[in-house]
Image: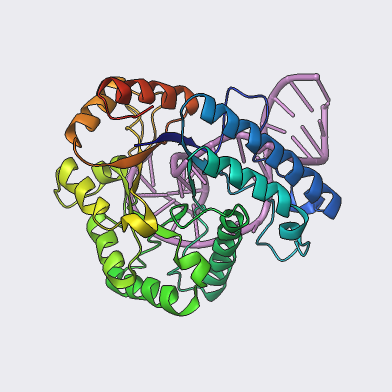
Length: 299
DNA sequence: CGCGGTCAAGTGGCT
DNA sequence: AGCCACTTGACCGCG
């Protein structure tokens, strides 16, 4: 089991998601920003290794406007050696990496342009992992998309786009995560049947919408969609509901008893856990302690 | 130099 | 009908 957090480190005084407005786009600005983002990413990775946080999600903003048509610069080649060095640091320290393209990536949209943009974004994010020379246990995590009033038809469209329009480099990394209102674990399992993509499990989303599966059973079903040799072990997102706020909103800080209970509930299942909690590595560090006390972490 | 409106992109539930 | 939430606020113009 590895524990981690997404994208941003709040302890360090740098950000790997610096960007700029489309209106201020220039090649110079792009190069300068990417260089700073990658330098910060290296620092974050070092922090993570020092603190035994061996699961990390890279921000989508490493390369601003990477999948936008305004960006015609060959940043892949320009930063090739930097990406390779980052990747070798990741491999040497046995870290697990994911990326989570944001809400604009919708493979089953009825709008062809949206699908096209989505594929371009997936190609960009996959190429980051490729440039780092990470194996296919490093994943791209998306949601099922919209339902558009006919979920079965929307799922068929998802499968069709998967089979006919995605490059192999994206397919081998693609995973689907249950969301908090439309695509339940059961729906995701169907998408898995249609495409073979592994299912990333999100406990908070599962609490928001489900088909009655108890937590242990739900995690076990998601875990069974992962081919250990090719995909690695189950990745999951862990969070808890922010008390008194609207459904699905993440808590500010980890509730250690709840996390403890979750680990006890999922005893015997192996997985890497991403803490989607507002205060980031602070909560991840506490989660490491809880998991250690239960003997679930090797480090 | 700090504040606040706005930012490439989508969808659906809540108010 | 508009706002909000989503893996993450950050940028930039204005006073």
